Image 1 (cartoon, rainbow, N blue to C red):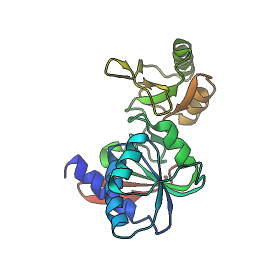
Image 2: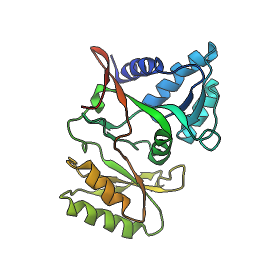
Image 3: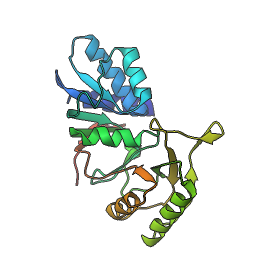
Image 4: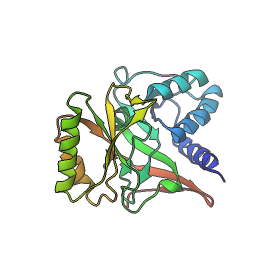
Length: 231
């Protein structure tokens, strides 16, 4: 099976966790978009849910496919969030933010009773860090924030380039109007220490480490779909 087929299979299994009447956080990225498509089929057949999207792109897709939406202000407590991930370790710690929606994704997931991650098996790693860590930063004081990130990483024994994410020759802007620095640290043996160090930097809005948020991961490979829980 190709990558898209695997994502669709994972999305279908994740859909089995959705119940009528749920207030549902709906993630961003290519795997989450496959979930939106299979969800839309069920909504068209009569399933009653209300979704809170984690990005403007997801919101547009939901509207196009007839998935009813609300906002987190109108529904501040959600039953379940289903979203993708860029990396998943055995403790279900995640790296997210490859699509640039990490701040809203984390806010929505934290407002939910449960979070289920959907992915293909290529996203599974023993230790996070193969995928560059997205760090959402305020444009003001960018160079000072970059320097602070570099110093914090060095203090934890991490090193590697910090790359300002660009699109069409200009800095990529998140839905919240922030920049993203992609940090290629390599293996991150202590995700909690790095999370705390990044949160202590005033110019850092949020980072793509999701610690203790995911309850399960639905992962598809050529042999089928399996549901993982934290080791």
